[in-house]
Image (cartoon, rainbow over all chains, first blue to last red; front, side):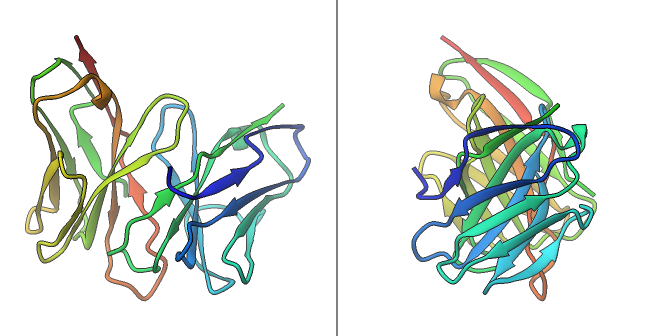
Length: 114
Length: 113
């Protein structure tokens, strides 16, 4: 167990809808990164949050947005859902933003868009 | 660009050894290794840092060749619990921005009794 929690576990949405996924980071960690993992692929970096601000982003459109709260928990919001957004969404927490630190993943949210 | 992992898949008998390779076209700052079982989240195994520092699993070893931008994960005397998909995630700069991991496509490892 990593201490990173995510909710909900599973979610089914219709194309065009909006979704919010939640992540609580491990105690002592101030950085949260979000990843999208399509079936049979490695996780893809969406963005990272540090001190309540977006600290960097991967190759994802602006309809993917997020928040980080003072307790370091985080949300991922996806607007105008598309069928290709169906995936496992993982958050990972780490002690610092620096690549020297381990990232520990939560159990993920499985999103299905129909 | 994502790192290239090899082999794509490997089947072993319990007790045999395996090596999984990860190669990048970019200069690497750190390499992170994870194991993921079907339907579960990736589990952290090891991190290798530029300069030689390593942190991680006691029973799994790895190497990092900074000049060749390559890392290898060594699984010795494999156990049934080692089955899963192994991913390397790389960081190509030393800070000043988000250090999101860039993952390879994974290596599927099957351990048979």
